[in-house]
Length: 172
Image (cartoon, rainbow, N blue to C red; front, side, top):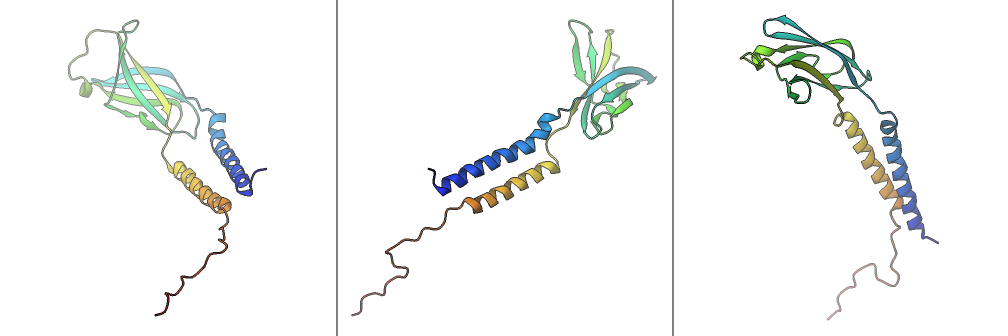
């Protein structure tokens, strides 16, 4: 039979495993997906192109949206991330139809582009990590660890046959 201290330790380990499972289960059980659909481009003025797209995903998530220019469509396609874009690009918090990106082509490419086929690609991914949530989880872990340490702390052992005070020196 296990000692009482060892039994407390086993209960503590099971408690921690169940706690982590409860924290991680909602994230694992509900994977969030994001889709970018209906990407269209239109020249608005000389050197300015407007790209529209539909962002399909969860309304309570934040997304990292990037714009790419893909050249040489087909087997030898190359893509380049475009930096001089504004609008619904970068961190996007609103999903829906008709999201707009304005790209200042002349700023990024002062010289005309070579005569190849080009198309725009818009990608989106769910932003994860950071935020207040991780501080809450870390604080809860510290609190649970402190409570567990108090609960499973072995009782102080009393030593038998020893003196509790220091004896006086012998007299002269």
